[in-house]
Length: 269
Image (cartoon, rainbow, N blue to C red; front, side, top):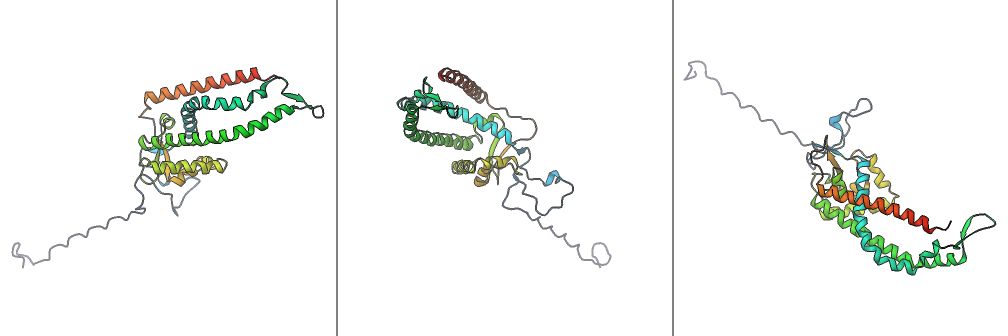
């Protein structure tokens, strides 16, 4: 008998079993990245939106052309100061190589057998001398510019999450696994990936246009993704970045126009 109710004694109700925690299908990934769908049935041509690879909420992968314009802008921002410093250092080398002979009257003649304009023997000899003189200089400039660009990108990726050109266009470079900014070591690994892309005739860069996560080969090598805010931009670029970018573009346009005018005046035909 139940001493309290006077009815038949009953056992206390069993405690409900605690539900087992749901297994995490990809424990090595944070919510930053939804993995590639695996063996998921698809209907029609397009997988449902919630099954597509994507970064965390509020972000989407940056498009190919937005990234191209950002890189071109970065090239101006880095290249103009570099050549302002390098030009006086290289001017004497170009002058001693006799490059002015290429634009002097009489440096070329018409080949009577073909009717084509060809270099004279003197000009051809000057070209051979210039090749021997300027070849090492071009190699040194390439290495120096590559190092300057490497420092520029890796430092800004680490400190700001984007280069100045990328920040102006609203894109960021993040680690693919957790969305954090890049370390300097990972940034240099991404720069190494740039060289791999270049050796492959820039196929690695173009790969980002077709990849599901918009990753170029350099991104896959370094484990990075390039993302932008979803929807309207809420964090505009700082004004000083806008000013620097505007000045770089105006200088580039001015140098191009001046070069066209000067070359047109030098060429004797």
